[in-house]
Amino acid sequence: MKKIHYLLSLPLIALCAACDLLDIQPVNRMVPVSVADYESILLGGYPRVDFFTRTELATDNVYANLNSGRAPEAALEPWFVWAATHQLAGAEDAYWNQLYSSIYYANTVLDNFRDRQPAPEEKNLFETVRGEAHALRAYCYFYLVNLYAEPWDEQNLDMPGVPMPLSAEDVHQNTQDNTRVPVGKVWEQIDADLEAATRDLAGKTGVSPYRFDYTSLQALKSRVYLFTRRYDEAIETATDVINTKVLSDMNSVQAHVDARGNQAFFGNTGFIDTDYKNEVLFFVGGRANNNIYYYSSYPFKPAQELLDLCYRFPEDSTRDYRRYIFDAFPLLDSEKLQNGPTVYRMFATQEKYSYYIGFKVSEAYVTRAEARARQDDKQGAVDDLNRLLVTRYKRGTFTPLLADDFTGEQLLRRVLEERRLELAFDGGLRWFDLRRLGKAERVVHVYKDATIYTLEPGDPRYVLQIPASEQENSPNMPLNPR
Image 1 (cartoon, rainbow, N blue to C red):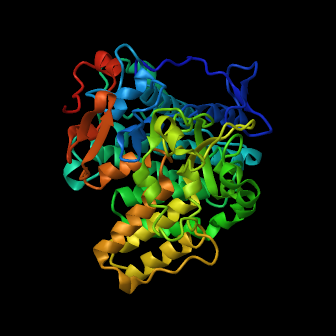
Image 2 (image 1 turned 30 degrees about the horizontal axis):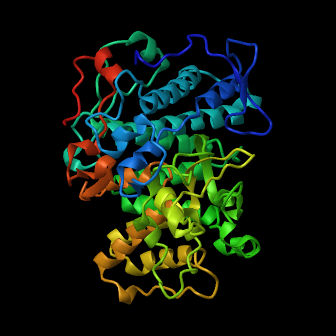
Image 3 (image 1 turned 60 degrees about the vertical axis):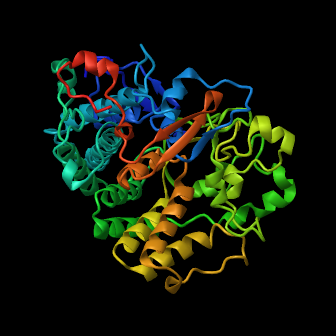
């Protein structure tokens, strides 16, 4: 992959005791030897910059506040208006580069470990590092195929996927004329890596929420199985997560709200500073402080439609604690014109660093609920929603849902609404969901000079274009239709 620049001699990376994702420092040795050396190299391969947040701009979760006095970054506009390419002229595609960089690091470890026989005292670490490398590679290919290729579907399996190097040597030897492996082959490799990671990570103790462990691997597997419509497997792996980690009860924020009122999640306190952080299985993608949806004066905002999902009961608007994540209710009406009625308060401008959410327990609940609903297990799906919602609604205000109150179609719609609300701005999942649900949504954005932009159902722009650098490097590579 020519336009992804690597050092031929990888610096050894050491993880600080604090285990913060970005607190990794190079040490003086340049040639890895021991299993611990390769562990340090793998840690340097975990994504350390955002590779999914801008996709939210292309969804119905975001609107542009046309009254804002602050101009958006030029690099963000192509995402919001669904330009033919999401890249500005001459700019690199940071998403493509980050994901293939991470794959390179994983491949470097796997190349060395392929024929390596660890010493007995290294066996546990060897298997842990090898399992993480397989998990990381599967994770990156999951993102690449969902960004730059058609979504999984029986009729799409032979369509162009993405280049798929499975060795670090491939990066150096095949510097030109890369080919796109078919979509189905990419998903097959994701499955193979997930199974290899499962064998290695089963029974191992997790090290930190910035690295894959068995539970976050199960969360990734349940996501993959849902996307590929293997609902029994999605239920099984989501259940593993649910049985291992508990949901955060958002009632724990009530004392904080009582003390600070409508200012509860302003300033240096974000929702991630509450007990909610204990629900997160895996943090990824660099620092999330000051993300582009946070600033009250910034033009791009969480859509009112998203916030409205928190207000199902107009007679009691305080029921759903998730409103605190999106609602800028302290603003006066005059301020709302310029600052907008919504912000994203998951991460605030804390003095301590916070990171993007890769996986959390609630995803397992909405995944299992959707899989059950699609298998006509209405009671099971309703049970999952009830277990989730009782932790999201103010104590004493939640009335359990009843399966008999829904048709199958109505229940699936409700499950997908809760999924949208729970996973908004997490891992780019709203964009991926719009794709996997048949590209059926007609998404409308209003932008500069009140110009209306529309992403029609089935629009080819639901697939990102191959980066310009790769087009130059591999001129025979088929491009995505426009």
